[in-house]
Length: 439
Ligand code: UDX
Picture 1 (tube, helix red, strand yellow):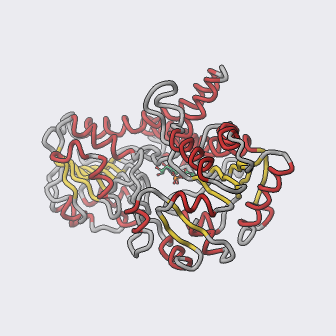
Picture 2 (cartoon, rainbow, N blue to C red; picture 1 turned 135 degrees about the vertical axis):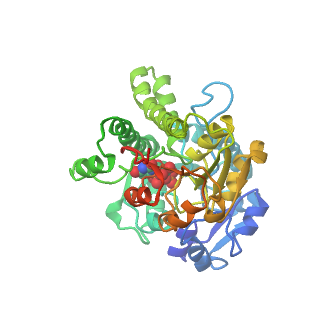
Picture 3 (cartoon, rainbow, N blue to C red; picture 1 turned 90 degrees about the horizontal axis):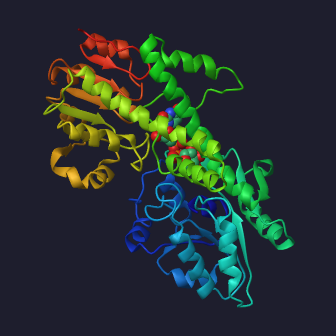
């Protein structure tokens, strides 16, 4: 919304939320989320044509277009628990809109939702015969965290789906007009609502599948002395495969991949497509396998016991340049290490606050430390969880000197020069490459 406001001064954009604390924070220098470049964009439009408010009712009344961006977490209860999206917030919002609205509106489905949700929403919205009409348009968001501003400023494509009726097409055109203020027309694609909804799930499923594919091969490389980076480079240069998203890692995290794939799996099962469901579910299973393999490797390398050993995690965010820790592989790793009675220290430049929330129940066993040098004092091992630039430039010689010996380094992101780190004295365990040890 900040980007739309910044690019289109002729529109008045109001962000309405029930959380007063967040609404307040959006109007300060300390935004509620860390996203490089976001503050500048907000500042550009704040109080010009970008406003923040807790007045949901008043803003529903006055808006011509409503972007519904409420959360749709994975359902934790009843039918579809653990797989399908929980639509209660979306439906509540739709019902609020019907109750309060006094004029025709375009309702944009911005939250990622299972296919055919817009249809249900349209029924709820148009059920009460108040003499007003609602058009539901799907406009899925493809930005990735950490690169959100450049993704929004220069998107590969903007996708807008609507009903193929006269009114539907007219509503769609109004949304195209907004984006056309800065996105070239040929990158704004339109289609029916169901195709738009499904495209979002499928894009994320395909991206996650690449990571699971390369991670599955990383396991094979570790057994055969092949090097996953060399394999990824060689296959990525095939233009049909492409070089992006082939970094072997501890596994993918984030609020979207797991959730969206499970959503897709659930839809396939509902339609009786069990083989298709299984195919995609395996992308998630390989991710869990990769996380489990990483912890097993740590335990095995450290003489099959990590009880009372001090282990420092470099990074807790699910990827670099964000403070977001949702579905971060680091959460799983910490829990497993604690089960083995290790003493865990976590350091991260942006995610420590979220890490403390995620680990509320085991806070007394975990230390949180902003300074990576302090965090590694007397540690037996370092495990790199997040590919922050910062961790590439630390003085590993100094760190090594203050650690217990033998010192271990598990590079869950393959970001360090392993040869160099080995020469300093560490026993180094990358992903998808042979370990470099001193034994
Ligand atoms: C993703 C999609 O990219 C975006 O289009 C969609 O709108 C939302 O979901 P995001 O979750 O922000 O975005 O992060 P993304 O950059 O896709 O990374 C997801 C996870 O995969 C991270 O944990 C990342 O570290 C991991 N990853 C990514 C790898 O392990 N290897 C790679 O090569 C790339």
